[in-house]
Image (tube, rainbow, N blue to C red):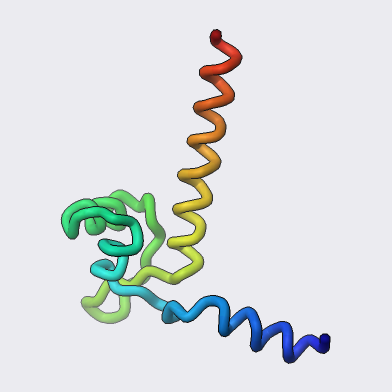
Amino acid sequence: MNEENKNMEAKNEDSRPLLLHVEDLIPILGISRSAAYLLVHKGEIRSVRIGRSIRIPRGALDEFVRNLCDSHVSERAAERSDA
């Protein structure tokens, strides 16, 4: 498979837009509107401003979820070593 086909497949696998609205986080993460804005405000989810609008790069959402998973694994490992 050539590089162009690999890129096309990668684009087809991720149908999310390049930049998400804060409200897009609500159904994806299963959180409230205020919780979504709080995560962005605290910098837990990276965001960019375009004029007065806040947008979340889809990679930032992936990064946030990855960090959640990593911290959960670390906490579980610490619990096991304490026992």
